[in-house]
Length: 381
Image 1 (tube, rainbow, N blue to C red):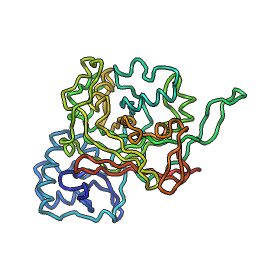
Image 2 (image 1 turned 45 degrees about the horizontal axis):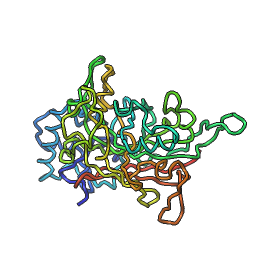
Image 3 (image 1 turned 90 degrees about the vertical axis):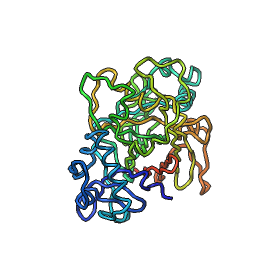
Image 4 (image 1 turned 45 degrees about the vertical axis):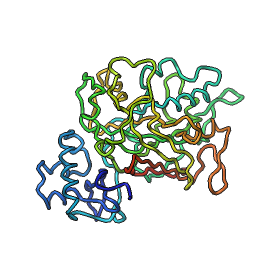
């Protein structure tokens, strides 16, 4: 099984013969949804499938999402209309990113980072167990899988002369994450409750939050990530609908102290999704999303509790996914323990951070569901 059967049907946008259109992936083919609608009689307005990206469908809401999915599963069981071999199309960005927010929701990752960056202090800052910590990223540098990643330049910590260094990052890293794609907007001043997660979030995609750790270490006090993060974020071109991973829902591992009322969620609120981090063909880590401390519903509630509005195309990242074991760490910062513990690839070479020419691939599965990969290769310009 490929993981891309009728129980999955991730959405995407492709170019084919000079035309850009919305598709779903089915095994090793894509299905042109406008062509499929023209050959059948859907019970909904097919115009939501006719645009150059997913925005009309995303904005239409859960009733439409459910109707389209039921129609697809019934129709594709017998119809071959609109099918094109996957190898003949070029995937594109599936939606225009409106806003991008990234969270810091793994207890294991946050604890590891605290130990590395602040070895003589408590790993977790006092607020961490009370709210999903996050930062507002740069929507314009979210790119689709396959886009080359240019090594960023910036300032680094001062040397012996007291002046900061400048140049290309020498500690280029990845962060294995899930990205949650908002479909239904909200009104400015309106708070979205954690229980309304499925009313607003259209689907999930794999996400790599590229990170320049040496730039980040110098700039992050007192306001947090900036140039060490904003140069690029990669996402898969395939968006898995929430309905496809409904059976992967699991309880959170436990939150202590109990969150404030607006962050309380009905169980189950987590997802059993297993990721792989692959460098030049070598699997270096298998982070488990089920180990996350804060759920995506809680992140959404916190992101809007001040009245900030949602827009169709908003994207928010889970933050680095890391488990308690060394081979479950979702960043090279953790795998190499701040660059002090090299790890070995299958070709015998060692790494701490990324070298030019390295290709990083993120994969994920939830039971029989295989997520679309996200990949990027490091280059210098």
